[in-house]
Amino acid sequence: MSIIDVRNVVKSFSIGQRSFTAIDNITFSVDAGKFATVVGPSGCGKSTLLMMIGGLAKPTSGEVKVNGEILTRPRPDLIGMVFQDATLLPWKTALGNVEFPLQLGGVNVQKRRSRAQELLTLVGLNTFAGHFPHELSGGMRQRVGIARGLAHDPTILLMDEPFSALDEQNRTKMGQELLRIWDVTRKTVLFITHSLMEAVYLSDVIFVMSASPGRIIETIEVDIPRPRPIDVIDTVAFGRIRNRIWHLISGVEA
Amino acid sequence: MRIILIAQLAFLVILAAFWEGLVLLGVDQSLLPPIAKVVSLLRHLLSDPEFLSDLGVTAIEVGVAFAVSVPIAIGTGLLVGESARLAEAVNPLIYLVMAIPQSVFLPIFILVFGIGFVEKVVFGITHAYFVIVINTFAAVRSVPAPYVLAARSFGATPAQIYYRIYLPAMLPLVLTGLRLGMIFCIIGVLLTEMYASRFGIGHRLFGWGEAYQVPQLIAGVIIVSVLTILVNEAMRLLEVHAARRYGALRR
Image 1 (cartoon, each protein chain N blue to C red):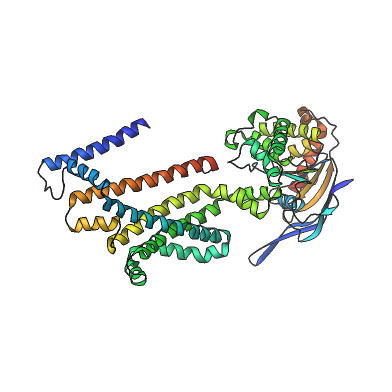
Image 2: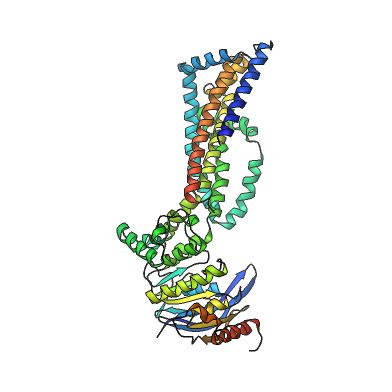
């Protein structure tokens, strides 16, 4: 059963007199509980797509349905978002940042504090609750970002290139960590990245996008069994999917 | 830190020694009185009710001018900072006005407002206003857009975005504006008092200068200097604290 439905979505922007189409007629859906990834070159409109699914932007035409509803505003109870560079508030501690969505929602202090503590434990940062973002490493900041995204216990997690600022090693580690968290929480995840390896390693299904105009050129089911130990990236099956995406994106026939 | 402090103290000592040295060398004492004389005058002035009342008059004028200019200036800064089109129209004007030494307008102010409390306060306001506007404007622009986007995604209302994101993120720069505004405000009020006024510390200083009462003049200058330094430092401490707490030093 699909929980995210994107149908014939077009998004165009106008800058002064000129207008350009960022997203050109995209249709896809994501089934509940799946880990789906949108992969594509930079500037293909991946983030714009995510904003529309998250209720932060309206499509120029077409419709986006989440859980059967057309969203006209953000719905933190339904969708949690995780951003590039974490975007944690520097004046709040890790705990304060995870509490923030609950604070906005009017949840009382005790309740939100214990919930935030619980989430920090889930992401492995329970001993860092009192640390400020600048006292945390890039990977830790993203863990806080994930915990914050989960604050309202949403059904869906939208993640916009969350690990793109991390080095290779931390990126791989965070990928594994994310799969562990996903396994525990069983959210539907829509993940955005331009890293092919990340896409193949994490996903059940991959939507491959082309740039200008942004279109989905292929949908790939990743049939690599879970759990996926890190060595899976050396297997033939993994390499074949990764190469296929690479050829699709670089415009060469596979 | 300690070495710097020692160097600063040493500078003061050298300055005092130079002063006293010139006096001993026989420089005209009506131009440069001995330190001891100035110090005894300092003590006398600080217990002189007339002098204190002049200080009080100036402090009230500065206080009122500052209190009036802060909300107006911050309001303008917010308004201009929020609207790209308004900023395009208003910013060049503000920078042009900032380039003019405001003292040239003083005779006009006096013609309009007469000599007295209102004239001094208004001149203080116009001095403080622009620098606070510019800093508030910069503060609005400094709020990182991703913070706002993230807050929106978590369901923040516009009021919550103002209160929970804009306010704390803007605080360090706004405080810088307020501190500079206070300095400008003091400049404006003192200038008016020296130019045309019957009361106030500026009037008093100017009078001493005209009457060749150099020891009083130096003592008065020292008192005003110390007071303004104290005000500035107090506000700067607040600013540094806010910058530590709310991010400017952390990014």
